[in-house]
Image (cartoon, rainbow, N blue to C red; front, top):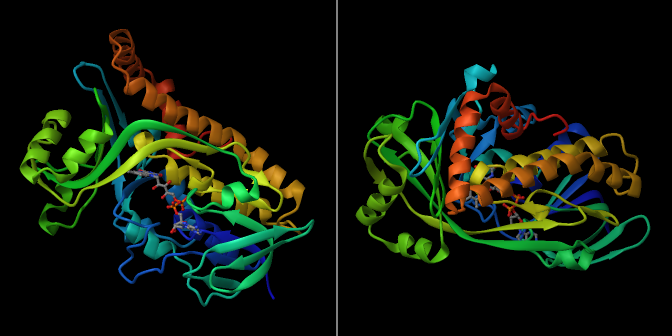
Length: 397
Ligand SMILES: Cc1cc2nc3c(=O)[nH]c(=O)nc-3n(C[C@H](O)[C@H](O)[C@H](O)COP(=O)(O)OP(=O)(O)OC[C@H]3O[C@@H](n4cnc5c(N)ncnc54)[C@H](O)[C@@H]3O)c2cc1C
């Protein structure tokens, strides 16, 4: 029977960061179970067509693990503009004004995946792929896990990093609660007439938020500086219609919502749709198991915090296990949960609050949030607080 210190269930972005972190910073043995085979070009359910914004802290922590986000096509965000459709209020932020060279980098998730994946032949590492967990039985000092591949092993700790996709949550005793936002996100890459100058836009529209992130979609290398990755939140029925609309109709609708601050939207790529919900576990640790990343909380993409928070979960767990003689001991897991609680709560509250505030059509609230944008634009302290939280460098994060 195989023995492992830590068995990670789910080999997406967070599962791989945990594996890499544990192999780099501890002497623990690590196994990873992933049902979908990894492909040479990077495409995978955990590393799909999404383009995501990595906060400065995430870029820094990945660099310490030897992952250079520039190799994943990373484009720095140096300026942010927040606007509310139909209102004059606006808030602008510049990285320089906060003594930063960038707020973060925008990367292709599939290219990031190629850099994150742990080589199967690493010492102290076992990859079970394709495989999933068939059963788990736990006693006081370990878990006995059998896999769909017929393999089985004893693990001192199970880390759930399956994005909340498997039935293991319930069987292990995690209590999950979900609330549908009644919104879907359309993602698409675009080229605009004007270059991006490393500016990211967050625009609040009557139907939901719309983000333009500077990114080179690779349509045409001479136009890379004109590229954006777009995340457009709309009601689900509109998302279905927009997904299949001809390019010209889609571009017109997108231009109507975004306006002309980047000139004409000239070209778009493939579209994909994601239904949006807030889904969290009440208890991030149970006997001999811990939930990390999307398995612990799945967020709205409005503030680009999902993976950033998941990475802080991952590195928090690595730090918690660094000097632990038994990685699954109750005290070790309890201390991890306590250390992560404030950051999780602050990030979930910020993200959920932004969705509710900026998806609301109440005229009184619309006037208030417009005043809020103006106030924020004029307050260095408010901007500083927002920047600390979204770059991952808030106290206690
Ligand atoms: C439109 C959109 C835009 C986003 N933008 C941003 C952004 O700008 N910044 C940011 O930080 N985040 C962003 N996110 C969130 C981010 O993409 C996720 O938080 C992150 O990718 C989650 O990684 P994960 O490894 O926790 O989970 P997942 O990516 O869900 O990975 C789970 C893994 O588990 C595997 N799995 C599935 N079933 C099983 C099973 N039964 N057993 C074992 N394994 C299983 C899957 O194959 C996968 O490999 C965005 C999300 C969306 C939808």
